[in-house]
Image 1 (cartoon, rainbow, N blue to C red):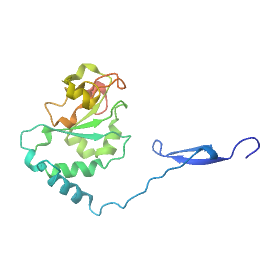
Image 2: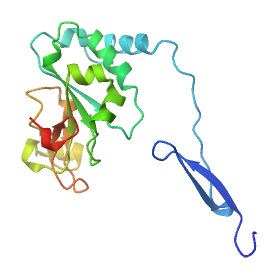
Image 3: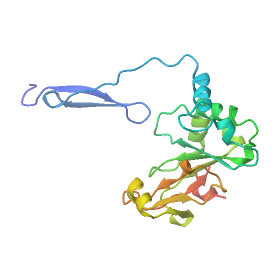
Image 4: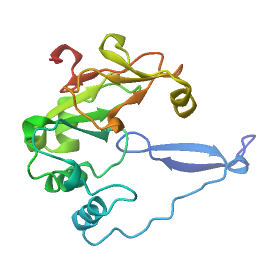
Length: 199
């Protein structure tokens, strides 16, 4: 006890970019920390190996063909993800796909769109300049198209599914998102992080 106050434990939370220190009552907290595993020696080689031997699917090289429209979904700035390494491996396994046929979708969910500076930090300025990069904006219903409202879709998604109309015919289905009461809106993908600059 410190005077009439219970003893406190200072805890550093992974919050924002720099973290956040908070004081919590010692008798009422349990701290669970992650167990970190060593990284693979060669991330590119590991990713390429996975793309060449997926579980229950043909290798990516057999699926991606010249002239196809390709959509690649990556996490937004709030999620740790090796985006550059993942994209490098994907591009290496699609050597005949033109850059102009690829759309990189930033999966923001209900978060705000990512800024141009954040996109450069996440993907690298070279990728942002070379490929079409679209930010998702969950608050614009106008750019949605129904992807399904049957019983099977509802059982998988908990609600009707919607997908963006701004992916220029890109697929696969993994680029689709679901609409739910929590999102209260459909999906929109806006170019370069600014709804005003959407083509």
